[in-house]
Amino acid sequence: MLTQTFMQHALLAGTSVAALAGLVGYFVVLRGQVFAGDALSHVAYTGALAALAIGVDLRLGLFAMTTVVAVLLGVLGGRGVADDVVIGTTFSWVLGIGVLCLSIVTTHRAQGNSTASATVLFGSIFGISAGDARTAAVVAVVLIALLAVMARPLLFASLDPSVAAARGVPVRALGPAFLVVAGATAAEATQVVGALLLFGLLAAPAAAAQRLVSRPWHALALSAGLAVGSMWAGLGLAFAVPRLPPSFAILAVATGVYVLAVVVTSVSGRARTPRVCA
Image (cartoon, rainbow, N blue to C red; front, side, top):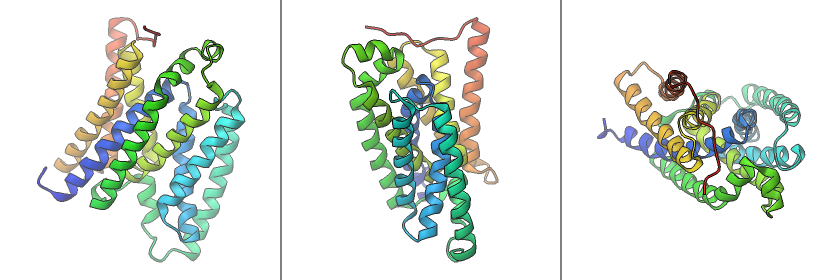
């Protein structure tokens, strides 16, 4: 399996994107912004369709749309935290734009783009090129570095925003900044697992880690590890069963990990809750 060039590219892109999704996903779950994460995954699809509609690089639309909407969600939500009403309203508006762009693509720019919409929706990790795989790895490293810079104050602001603000942590600024990183993560991961399935890679490993481990830093590392493990297992499963779509296999493993975590914590009688530690 590892001697196949397409599998090498898939592992390079998939591992970097999964590690990023696991780290960002932990804060998404911890901050109660799962709905925002779901919205950003659909925003990524709309951004890709908008790029196709105007005839520019698909990745430009992905990153531009998710970044702009992420800033809007953070700023309009108040206190730097995305509000469900704002998310729902923005979500509807963005989906409306997506319908318009889809109509333009299918009626005026269908030639040469017949499979692009399906690729953005469901991903095409086995079809990723060497250049795109390297780009995905570089982008993931940059976003992980940005997250690492804000991780400590972001954790403080997530667990106790009032005390964090009193201690001088820029809570209002951290919210939109984190959502921008989450939006860029959605844009990057969409190219690997697809917009429809991205949400599972963001939420499932992080939710499992949060149930299993109470120490935030340990849970953060576990979330990334579970996401990467799900990616590897899913790719191996899809290679072994050619009729199985890789994106489905990856998300099926990630979901299975979460279900297992729920069962383990239910049998043990308690689920872990994040706690501040020195």
